[in-house]
Length: 167
Image (cartoon, rainbow, N blue to C red; front, top):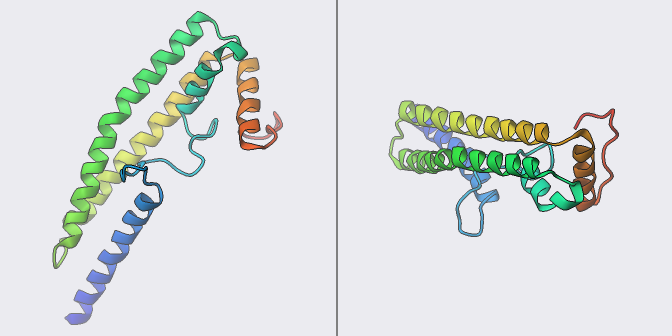
């Protein structure tokens, strides 16, 4: 029986590490994790909404029309309003997971359900990033998208990908 308890406890420790380490590695200066962000998530066509911010920041260089600027701003505001409640739910879920893991013995059924719930939130956040990215790209012309790719590549010190390569 002690081996079974030790096995469950070991599993709980591994789950805890799997959750906590990514949050620590991606913590902002205020100690709050940047949920759903991956290294490089700010890069064009990899992370979503930052393409919109970058396009708006360089609107004169891209020669954006007033309609394009308005559409990009509307898309950015919509994206931000969608993700903020999900970020809050995710933070709350992570706190609940931490509390469940401090119980001895941990209630593995509740823990599993809470982990699945937080992963659904992460999935929704990822989809919303993709949706914002696609919406932002659809507002720009092909030339503007290529110019923006060049800007992103130069910021990273890289050359833009060839048009034949996947973005």
